[in-house]
Length: 93
Image (cartoon, rainbow, N blue to C red; front, side, top):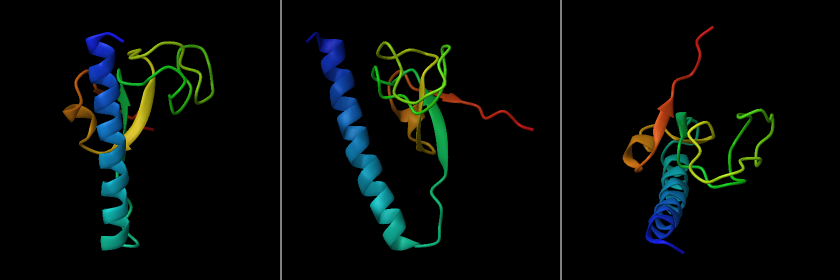
């Protein structure tokens, strides 16, 4: 495994642990509060995308790691902290 893949794997693992602990803390702190989410592209591992892009309509069909067109939902403000992460703006209306 080359260094870039090791760094990406470590970052995604840390992100998963942070998101999980953050979500648990948020749920504990305010049972009725909803955590705001945002779409984040450019960081998804192959087969780990959340929804349709690149000609497919289903989650889990990303073909390659870090494809700029594939995205995953993360707690708001998290994407911009990840190297390579780009916030996908939601279409209005």
